Length: 409
Ligand SMILES: C=CC1=C(C)c2cc3[nH]c(cc4nc(cc5[nH]c(cc1n2)c(C)c5CCC(=O)O)C(CCC(=O)O)=C4C)c(C)c3C=C
Ligand SMILES: [Fe+2]
Image (cartoon, rainbow, N blue to C red):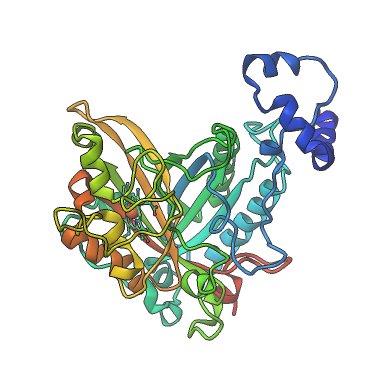
């Protein structure tokens, strides 16, 4: 069995595209067809690997990586008695496990959950919360960017599901692969750290649409259109910590803001299509601005209708959140949807695990959320229920672990 699995993984490079044809549409026919003993190539979805140590850039995987279908966000607190030494040993163990799993290799004493699957674009991304620095005696090296986020008027945050010393984002295009990584990392924590909170999310499965396109959220909107693009000249400056930053160990890193945002879907779904589109300022069918064109056409924020009012209303979410309304502020949004069953009143406990990336949260998330808090038509349909802010160091150098320059520097 092990031999045929290794052969499977070994052949994917050459046979990935053929595999996509053979197994991609899968379903019952695909499963039945694999019951003979001949080894078959994985589909490209299963075989795709994301490097733990990217060759060309200094950033951890899971920031500019395309959205994956399945995700887990998990926060840990260092256990009483665990300090800098234990934290360093833990990040060393975690980095090793993440590198192995992302490469499609199995750790010792494996649970077998992901047996037969390829790495499926698995990414594991590590972050450090404000409280980590006190616990490890490193408060002098805590960046000001980790200062707590301000309170916003509509916040209803649950402290038990917020913050934490350490944060991990796991993403993969296969739910078993993602869960497998979560359990391996949880076991690695051993007695050094305790789980604080955990959230599960999902996005559209690759191959579910006729061609790759921007994902939709649970309100049905095309979500992610006006994200900064890696090809933008100011992308790196906006998303990643610069080479002259005070805290040397964060150069090439980024800051992640995480919010569990429940959607009031029963209320939202009562609104007509016309009303829903005015709340966002874009068409639901294709994500195009209300001022016309296609999804990628820029919004014309100065256009007025026959009634003399702005075509994209003054409180439309896309207008209020746009860089033009926020002194140029922008962040990279990379969310997962969530559905945790139903509440006592029958309403879905569902929404967005909003994850955004930026070089400076004060000049990106905080600036924009302050504006949204004051006059965003979408806010009436949302509840912010949990929050976290994490420093995400650059990727580890070869033979090293994430955060070593901080912990041993
Ligand atoms: C503080 C930042 C933001 C929060 C919180 C937020 C929540 C949130 N947004 C949507 C749906 C959409 N957002 C869209 C655009 C958009 N949103 C933000 C910021 C926050 N959103 C920004 C910076 C932008 C881009 C604005 C621009 O430059 O045009 C859109 C439109 C399509 C797109 O560009 O992605 C949608 C749809 C939900 C459902 C939500 C909370 C659950
Ligand atoms: Fe938004």
